[in-house]
Image (tube, rainbow, N blue to C red; front, side, top):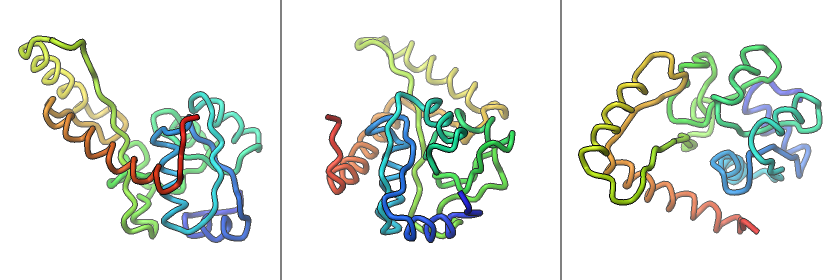
Length: 182
């Protein structure tokens, strides 16, 4: 696609209505990142859901899709190899894996910030001592410099609060766009 940055992408998408983008499935953070981007820029993007990131990456590499929203750990090797071009990262902060790639906010979308997050869950009824020990050890591992993204650990209570706030944020986005998992 003949664009060098987010501003050119927006211009290109406005000139080419109904442009498609790859997602790793309906309702994923990648899908909702694209929906949010389209809402904020008033462009019409059509998501193409795949069963995971790799099939979408392969179709992008084959020239079948013009763009995608993806979690960086999956696509970073293709970006570093020059096979994909990263225009921006969705998070509030630049990624340590791609420090020269701006955030969407730095690229001109002031209020755009979607930070992917991952959680570790255990069976109901786990002892609080085990939960606390796992939480502490996972935080130690995530603090290692080779994590590749803005990784950090939290507490079980902080995870619960994050889940609820993210659910509410994405619920509003999905309702506005009438996204259905069907």
